[in-house]
Length: 418
Image 1 (cartoon, rainbow, N blue to C red):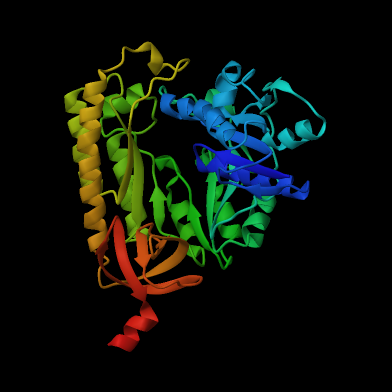
Image 2 (cartoon, helix red, strand yellow):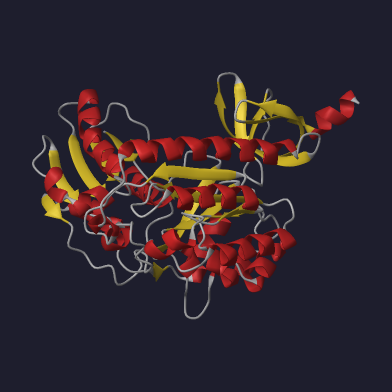
């Protein structure tokens, strides 16, 4: 019997899907995280945007094309938000939500069917270590969110913030077979276990031989204490993804983001005082309902001032049930045009950041082979390409620009050519 767990959306979903894969494997299934023929499919869905929900619904038809007789379980945020859009679809026998995914296989074992989304979110849901097929592992330490940004539906679906025990998280990080660990969650900035926070967790894993990378952070968590803890981590990846969303203070206020542009900028300066060559990456929403052309220009200017190495930019998507959904939306063509301009700036900033490392040495971890090249990322999250397969964390010399990143050679090979 074969089972596929297909994931849409965030890295937290990836982690939870990995745990489901492990549980299915222990039940005797041959498992995969890629779409293909299977007897059982679990679709782990996303609802962060309207497009994500649409793709989640379309995934049912995609799996049915591989096996029209397969059993299907649907879970995740889209299923939590609108279970009726999945229940009753052909071969869908169980619909669960975004919380306590550890109970999905228990429901499967007991032969449960129907819609089962009413579960508690008061305690952290401990899951088995994810089954991973990659050299980088995402390890979840937290779930839920208390921020209630006016555009975001996730707190309503995932529930309030709750954290994993520090001992459990540290044990999984140390025992992971992966060569890089990314610490992730819905809002890891709010991580708290008995008065211990994210800085304490970093100190607990400071001697871990793996490369340690932090997932998305709120700017307010970037304190001297956190940076000092990160500096002590043996193999810390100097990459800080600080969600911005807008460079306009007026828009930030309407978004219910609790900082100003200047406060955010001060945090990026603090990062660079500890890690001068750090990658500072971000998320920016264009076309928020109250965003004027002047507001958008401020966002462009601010992004250029910070010198982000990467920007994950996307157009505002109205989410029913949020505060922002009550505000009249901007015309699609306005959002599309602004997104175009921001993408162009993001491309320039990325290339400018990458050019600084030509002729320098970086640490490369190979993740996959594609089109005859071995691809991976550096410690500061630059995509790297090598013609030769390199094993483990390797020192590489950057030769020049290539595709959407940089081309490298093994530093030892470069020495022999000199």
